[in-house]
Image (cartoon, rainbow, N blue to C red):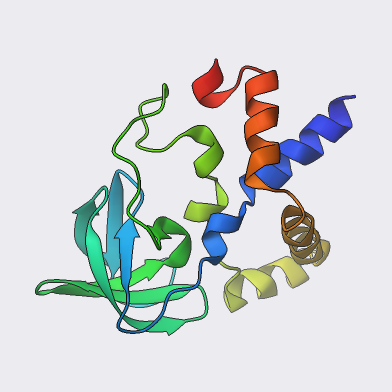
Length: 161
């Protein structure tokens, strides 16, 4: 019984919000308490600016999972999982985050595998890790938001605790 819950938990961590489709010239909203605008589309790039929750941004460019946005004079790159296509709700979950537990994920803050990380994995014999992540993302596509809500409610997790 523990294994299905572990798999479901891992799949919940890799939820759909990280794959939202943003269009150049369109808008996006920050969905984290603090969102960094990075100087480059790289996970380890220095933060040029910091934005608060629910900020409306203009989309300038989309490059894979990275989105270049502007907030007035401030411009930078944001991991797409940290953005929403629609303005997020102002209500807070019981854990103090601005979103309900069923609407957020660990993947939203995760970064794609950089070539250096892949090379390190190859040197250390961790090549299966990437395949595992790809499998988990594929499995995640099959889980609906309704299923996540039902799981959280039935198990008294997140805002249902």
